[in-house]
Amino acid sequence: MSIKEELIGKIKDKTLTMGVCGLGYVGLPLAVDKAKHGFKTIGFDVQKEKVDLVNAGKNYIGDVVDADLETLVSSGMLRATTDFSFVKDVDFIAICVPTPLDAHQQPDISYVRSSTESISKHLRRGSIVVLESTTYPGTTEELLKPILEKGSGLVCGKDFYLGFSPERVDPGNKIYKTSNTPKVVGAIGEDAAEVISMVYRAILDGDVHTVSSPAVAEMEKILENTYRNINIGLVNELAMLCDKMGISIWEVIDAAKTKPYGFQAFYPGPGLGGHCIPLDPYYLSWKAREYGFHTSMIESSMMINDKMPEYTVERAGKILNRYKKALNGSRVLVLGVAYKQDIDDYRESPAIRVIEELEKTGAEVEFYDPFVPRYREHGKWHEGIEKIDAEIISHYDLVMITTAHTTVDYQMVVDTGVPVFDCKNVTKSVHKGDSVEVL
Image (cartoon, rainbow, N blue to C red; front, side, top):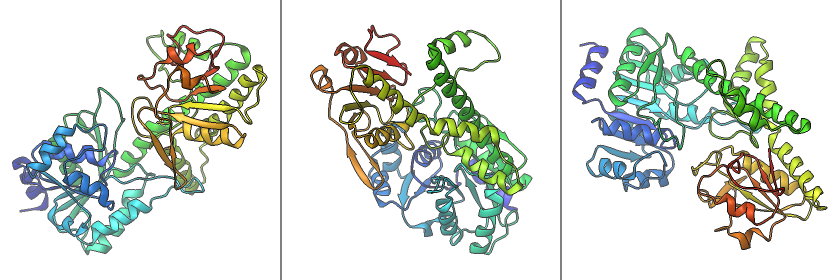
């Protein structure tokens, strides 16, 4: 029996053992979906704390249902380990590890490299490896394939299958989760593409779109997020211009989106956050230089978005000036450090950059976030205040709203009379006077 026939048989009778390397925002929901669809699943992670939590049935990811995890672990369908020797027991393993930028804003693929090396030592014939981490086009074929072949002694396409299927995770999204979001698959060889697509169809409820190569799938993921980066950069630049012209950019966008075709609304803010949109364009521009190509439009949008935290702090200073106060020595309350509303994820959050820029001016800064009581940055924990009320807010010189959490009483905040700089337009439906300025 060929590898293809054997794997298809295991998919159909659900005897295929699944693996997920990296149990974070992408990996844990994927592992849970695999197990929920009847496939025994092993999660791999180098952080013992995560492994222990999973094995105890304790959830730490917002998009995973607590009861689902507990049930799957107690029934033996899902377990986690730090021991990569158990890779020998899986037929399919997805790599879902971080791909951040280094100190020089260049791709840091060290997590992908080390995970692939660990897998290669225990990879057996008839296995499938799929990279889900966002990366530059060419990573799967140029980096993973040689590592896996060298470490295992096996031949890609003959002894094992290799592909790329970009993660599509939107933390906090009430409609689209891992299970019902369409999936893109690109693999080395037609047989690999067919089998890998079949695996995802067996574990997800969304459609699967197969492309001709891993590079196409890698570029597709970069396009998704670069598209958003560029459009957000456009509205951020227009927000700066509209401020000078005395026009509300928010009203402009509301008017433009009445057009039923040819326009999609994007909104300004204090910067970009999350695990993809602020990072992916850097991966593409870095790879493009290998071909002597400069992604001028992409790099321009990145420059605009990167300077938004500084711009919002400059605006904050102007607001205080109108009250005959300087940022230096003023008490500023930042509302929200999560990178988007109603989640506890603060990766690459622009609010943290805003806090750092405020502190550079000499401002005394505190923050409140109902979802993020504290955050870790530059190796140090930063503690937020436990609650807000009118009495507490009255002791500040300025409130900056940097995350649009829906659980905050913004009417109460505005009613205190303390100057408010609303960077997310959350006070749109709040009765407000002259004390509120919107980005």
